[in-house]
Amino acid sequence: MDNNKTDHECLYKKILDNSYDEIFVVDVNDIIIYVNEASVKHYGLHPDEMIGKPVSEIANKGLWYPRNIHPYTYITKKGFTVEQKTVLGKTLVTTVVPVFDENGDVDILVQNARDKTQLVDFESELSKIRKLLENNSVQDNTIDNKHSEEQNGIITYNNKIKKILKLAQKAVSAGSTLLILGESGTGKGMLAKAVYKNSNRSDRPFITINCAAIPENLLESELFGYEEGAFSGAVKSGKKGLIELANNGVLFLDEISETSLAIQAKLLHVLQDKTYYSVGGREVKHTNAIIIAASNKDIKEQVRQGYFREDLYYRLNVVEVELPPLRERREDLRPLTYFFINKFNEKYGYKKEICKECLELFDKYEWPGNVRELENFIERLIITSEDRIIERDDLPEFFMDSINELKYNESLGSLEKMVEDYQKKIVLDIYRKQKSIRKTAEALGVSKSKAARLINKYK
Image (cartoon, rainbow, N blue to C red; front, top):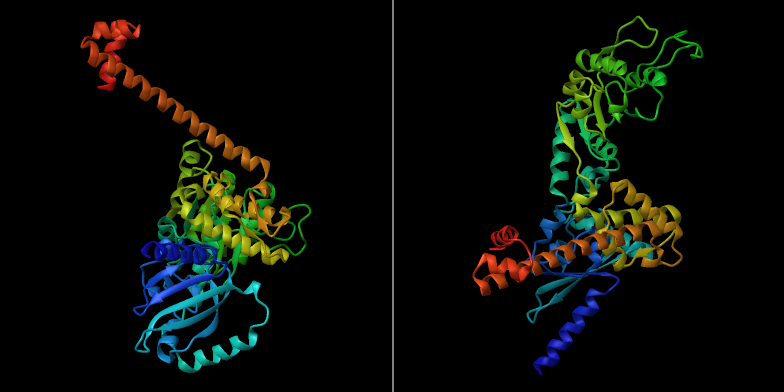
C-alpha cells in the first residue's frame, strides 16, 4: 500500500514538474513549498533556489510586479487572477487559489501562472481584479518603478555584477568620472546607460560616441565641435560638439583607448578644468558633463607601451570597474537566454521556445563574444528555426564544432590522467613487491635514477 502511495506521489510530482504553466505553492507562513521548472523561463531562477524561502525574500529581488499578491487571498479567502510583469520581460496571467484545512482556514495557496502570449480572452476578468486590488489597498504591492526594470536592463544574479552596479551608481550620482573595463560584448554600454538612468541626471542628455568607429581627423570636431571656416568642407554656421550637447548630462566615451595622444591631451583638459576650445575657436567653453569611459583593452599596458597618457588614465579611473565575461557568470546564462528569446519573439512576432538539451549545450559553450554574442545567437535561432521549439538540430555548425572540440580536449585530459594513475599503480605495486629501487628499475626496464624519481613522485 505504501509503495503504491509513493508511486502515485512520484507520478503527481512528475506531472507538475512538466506542466507548461508555472505551479507555485506556499504554506500559511508564505514559505514556498513547491515550484516547478517553469520558474526558470519566467524569472531565470531554478526551483531549488526558491523552495524553502519566504515569498517576500524572492519578491524583493524585483523578479515580478506586483510583488506580493497573496495578502488579498488571506484576507478574503477567495481566489483571484492578476496580471504580473517579470524581470525577463514576460507578462504572466497568475491565478491564486486558496486550499482550506478541516477548520475552514487557509492551509496553502496554489498559484498557476501562464505566459500572456498563450492566452486570448482575459481582459474583462483582469480589469475586475485590478479594481478589487486597488480598493483593498493590499500592503507590499508597491514597487519602485526604476527597480522593477531590474537595474534598467541589467539582467543578473551575479554578486560581482551587483557590487559593480552599486559602485558605478555611487560614482555617477556623486558626479565622478567612471572607467568601465571588460572584454567586448560584456555590456559596458548597457552599464553606462543603466547608471545614467538611475542617476540625478536621468532627465539630462546621455550622449554616446564610439571612439574606434570614427576616423581620427573627424573625431576631434565631433567631440569638441568647430567654428565657421575651421576647415575646408566645414558647415558655414559651425557645429556643436558632443561635449557641448552633453552639458549637465553624461558623455559616454566608448573604446577611449583608441583615441590619439593629441585627442587624449584635450580630453585631459576637459576633465581637469571643465573647459575646452572648439576646433578653430578662440572662446573658452565650459562643460558640466560627467564622463563615463570604457575600453576592452588593458589601459595600464597601453600606458606602459606609450599608447595612452598616464595622466589621463589617472583622471579617468577615479572609480574603475571591470565587468566579468559571461563564462565567469554562468548563473546569468539562462536568465539572459530567456530574456532574449522573449525580446526577439516580440520583435518578429513568434512564440518560440528552446529545448532543455540546447540549454545544456549553452552551458558548455565558452561564449567568447559574451552577452552580445548570446543576443545575436538567440536572434539567429529565432529567425532560422523551422518549428516552435528550438532543437539541437537548429544549432549552427560552428557552435557544435566548438562543443565537440571542447569534449575532445576534455577527453584528452582524462586520458592523460588515466595513464598517470595507471603508471602510479604499476610503480608502487612493483616497489612494494621488490622492496628495492634497483630491482624495481630492472622490473620496469628503466634506469635506477628514473625508478627512484618515480617512486619518490608517487609515494
